[in-house]
Length: 364
Ligand SMILES: *[C@@H]1O[C@H](CO)[C@@H](O)[C@H](O)[C@H]1NC(C)=O
Ligand SMILES: *[C@@H]1O[C@H](CO)[C@@H](O)[C@H](O)[C@H]1NC(C)=O
Ligand SMILES: *[C@@H]1O[C@H](CO)[C@@H](O)[C@H](O)[C@H]1NC(C)=O
Ligand SMILES: *[C@@H]1O[C@H](CO)[C@@H](O)[C@H](O)[C@H]1NC(C)=O
Ligand SMILES: *[C@@H]1O[C@H](CO)[C@@H](O)[C@H](O)[C@H]1NC(C)=O
Image (cartoon, rainbow, N blue to C red; front, side, top):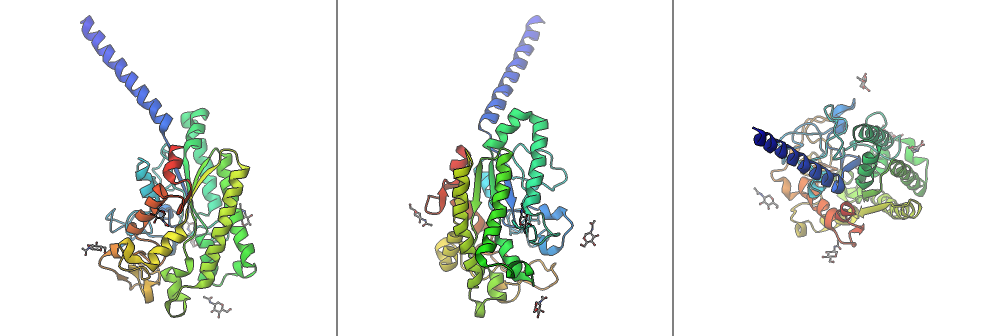
């Protein structure tokens, strides 16, 4: 009897010992992933806000490829952050707005389709970047309550903060009659977008964030939606692409300044402009049949954002084989394209993802 009790006791303490060890190693090497931004990174936050179908993708055929049901992702399947989480050995990072979501140990995703760095961008229909950062502050409080200040601080300083923002700030003034942009010079407008984005980055830094991952802007004038609506005979809209180029130049300078100003600030910036341009000009080199025309939508280049038939226009076409396309709908890349981009963000060399790739940031 005594020896049996000793045996049980031994088993228990051995189990406790193991769990302590694994707990400690988890904490030691654990890198969480926090995500901010727009529809490129939104896993379904807009499913839970009072908005319109223009800002949502929680209907068929969105989600047809990987999940087999719509999730709110603006893609046939997974989006870039889903692949980054996989490469980092993390589970899919859930939407912050998802009601049952209370565990933030692995990180959480605040991104919202249609969001911009400027408050005016689709105001009232989306969760803007500033509001996303205010939610992050709540998450920090909740982590502090759960783990204590020291462990929460450690988790936040080791975490990677992935951000995709800016596209909507530039598209918004083109998409409807908006007084926002017309009253500014291009350079001033870009400075304002970058300035607001910088404020949000500094807020995250103040709360303990150190490692940031970015994508710059695609050649915006070449999105199927822009080509179809504004481009002459389907050519790219140079005015918009030029804005993206100005933004991307200013982003390089802003990130370098942040690095110089903020101790311990590290970043990775993927040249999304370059990787999309290459796939547009030589789709077959990257395994696509079609770069210009979306898989899902209507009108020329399927450039009308009618995919799913819920945004005011009921009729739309859907391609047979989504893997042949760079764009799924008139604005967003397919899962296949997203995976290629995510790989370049994760392991890309300095000619495409600099100064570090995301793998290096996660290991740092
Ligand atoms: C949602 O937005 C619509 C239009 O903006 C408004 O009429 C409605 O009252 C809002 N609903 C809620 C629950 O806030
Ligand atoms: C961002 O830009 C808007 C103008 O859209 C401005 O009113 C606001 O103060 C700026 N700052 C932040 C943090 O959003
Ligand atoms: C935009 O403004 C122009 C000129 O002011 C007007 O002709 C046009 O109908 C407006 N478009 C929309 C969608 O409001
Ligand atoms: C779909 O397209 C991809 C890329 O072109 C190709 O590899 C694949 O074989 C196609 N699948 C079918 C069922 O045709
Ligand atoms: C970057 O350089 C590698 C070799 O170092 C090359 O294979 C790759 O094609 C280059 N990528 C780009 C986008 O230029």
